[in-house]
Length: 107
Image 1 (spheres, helix red, strand yellow):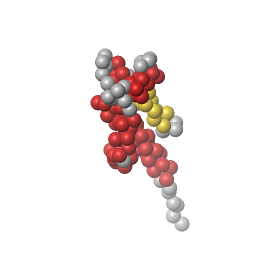
Image 2 (image 1 turned 90 degrees about the vertical axis):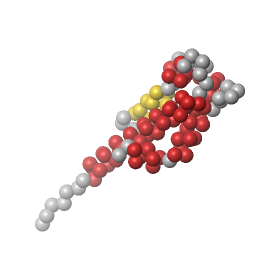
Image 3 (image 1 turned 120 degrees about the horizontal axis):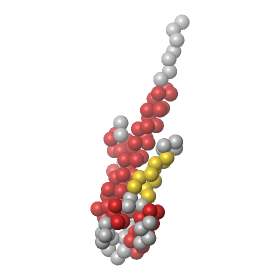
């Protein structure tokens, strides 16, 4: 009788890595789009955004602005008279691209 060899563990490991990369790429895309949309005076807000990932869980978060010492970041996002919701609009535009786009890029 022939032995059956399973490759499912390798498959799940590979797919998990692809999903982590896709999530990170999607967060990076949000940052790139937000940098084009946010108000600029000194450039500190624009250059403060980063993607922070949790390797174990595969979660990605965008940190920047008030999280890294730019106290006016929340005001710019929610109260700026012409550029408000720049981060939200960047996220919405990225979601419209669809996760599949980032999944395919990450293979």
